[in-house]
Length: 297
Image (cartoon, helix red, strand yellow):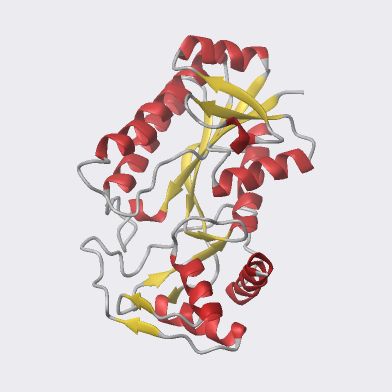
């Protein structure tokens, strides 16, 4: 049976994808870059990347890897001149190496993770950060390999991802902590809209895209949007947390300014065909509150 390679398997989404592939008995390998601690990939089969593209391609062939799920990325909380090269190296050069190794190895399917922040409010390509610009640039590289090297590829445009096991410094975990501890929290005015996407729904979309590529129903790198059904403001999200937790929160609205590149209304495009989100935000918040209680206890 052919195998799947997952980049970024030690991250939030990548871990969930690897576990789902294991659950389905799909042979899967996590790609480990130089310098990464091996314990981050416990219980996963791994391939090591030492920087040599031809060796990586040979490893793909040896392990019969026919499909790639590309999750690896760097998303800094604040972009500075000091981390620009890290973003470029991780989101462009590393991804380009995976594409070239895939070409050399004869990989036939490639599922890429995009982001809603690549697009303006009307759906036009308008990245609002270096991170988003590199994701858009990688999508263009993927189109080249799809068009000229027989790589069946798809880009899944993901929205505001959340769920259990998320250790990233993100808004929803901050709200959960504020609800449980009673501590005050500084926030923007909170009128920007967001589209929450539970990680299990995101994984279901990735698996569906992988299956589509396998049976030939995928296309040459079209954008397919993977988003929840609820478009809410940050203030509305806070009210959901208050309602589900039964506790009023001390949020200092307007204590922090909006980011200069703040996207106030994200564009929501046509969803991945055959996929629908199943987890409502209230259900997801209840799950996170239980997780917080279990960890604190």
